[in-house]
Amino acid sequence: MSSLGNVRTDLAIEAHEYITQTIQQKDLDGVDIEEFDYEDIIVKRAKIKNLQAAKQMGKEMGNYVTLEIPTLRQKNSALEEKVSQVFAKELNYMVNEIMDKDKYSVLIVGLGNWNVTPDALGPKVVENLLITRHLKELMPEDINDDEYCTVCAIAPGVLGITGIETSEIIESIVGKIQPDLVIAVDALAARNITRLNTTIQIADTGIHPGSGVGNKRKGITKEILGIPVIAIGVPTVVDAVTLTNDTIDMVIDTLIKSVGKGGQFYQILKGLDREEKQQLIKEVLGENLGPLIVSPKEIDRLMIDMGEILAGGINAALHPVIGFADATKHLY
Image 1 (cartoon, rainbow, N blue to C red):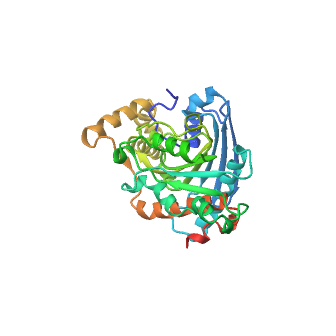
Image 2: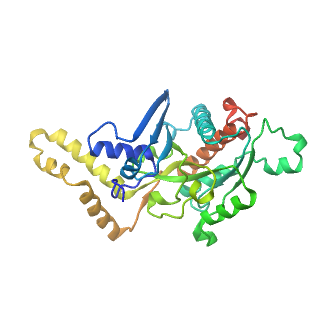
Image 3: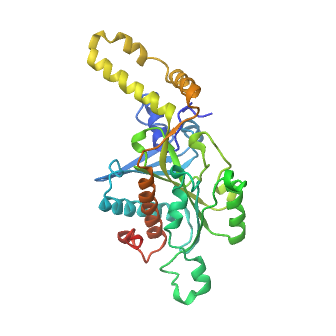
């Protein structure tokens, strides 16, 4: 069991923040973090180097790149294009780090349930991808290998629709078509509501669909598939228990500031163990609502926009003919 306890998040950077805040220590042994600032976009590259750090953070050993764009939920075409370009460069960097050859074939998997908007990110990305595998087979003379990567894609649905574990579907496809790399795209869960649809994570550790909302399924990883797996995700939901707990903490902090020295009662509340508070909130919410997951009210538009941003970045990263500067142009 990880040191995060009941905190649910798929984001490595959030896990790192929580652990370092808990132990009141800026750096965590076994985790290296680099940060780059592109004005509206903050890129953080985290590397989990040993098993102890991985256990503390509740994440696999490996590399995690996070793009944080606080204003992304405000409709801004210029910013979206810039995000797609930076995302393409970071994805290209990670692909080049793990692939040992210049030319390779890629299977892109759009995970999630297309009938549930917050979980439909994967299928929406697949809709906008530049697919080339069939073209290279049917008219190879018209497709230059130096300009276009061999790409195919699938949106396999979820266990509740197909009755088949997604990992088993992907494993079967990989065995049949034998790609060199799998890129899995999925909606994630965050701890902080400000990160919903404003954060992109890229990881070379594969993915366990549903783990952020307590519905852990068989993983899509290199150990299972036998080939490298890059996971791309965007948080679209937050656990209501975590959200409520954070809100209560912020209210208590505000009351302490406003009351001053007379706020001993609020100081006592602030000193309560976080796990105990979360368990109490969980019990109260559970009696009335059951497990509750929250997403923004404009989630429909956000998912369409993010699907285009990620697809444009993936296309630019994999197909040299597109180029980073033109990451989203073919989508409009």
